[in-house]
Image 1 (tube, rainbow, N blue to C red):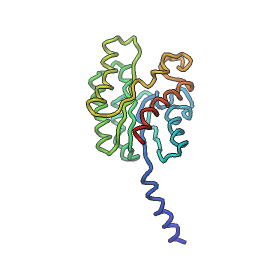
Image 2: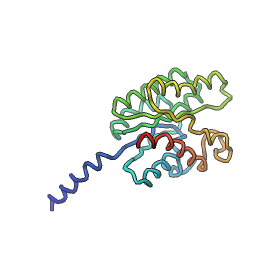
Image 3: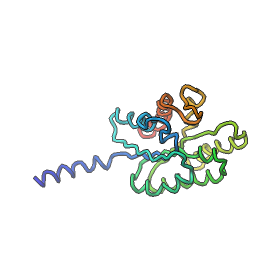
Image 4: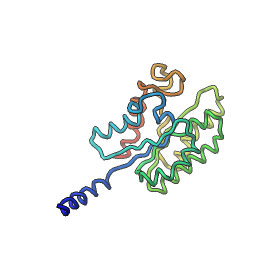
Length: 200
């Protein structure tokens, strides 16, 4: 009996090893602030993989209010724990909202990408924007970091992930910053459109 159980376990090991782990490192946009987390775009993305079916498992390691510095500080244990094939980085919005240095934000994101790659993961950047009242110069400095990094580090970029949501009041919460449950499927579709071809 013991031998049979052992054989079954050993037979499952290659299957388990093939499972693809994805870590999503983000802030409130990805953590599902103000909505049922099951309705959030990360969970909807996981449902897409399950429907294939697929062996992809997504670990949502997002914290509301997190900055690029916070994400960097949390990164190493996450890489060690999940051993991801991909890391999706949705950080920076809180740096911008707090008026933090765009150069520091770029440095933090660069280190996140490099550490992830060193751990054997591919990285995808998820672009964000900040409200227009911060002034054109700062807004441009902020947003241009994403395409600059994508080019410099040769990683894929999903442009502003709220592009199809942010200007539609019916898809945004009352604060005007966070998408509601209606906007989540559009975000999931946008990210899926960039991610799935790379996984295939």
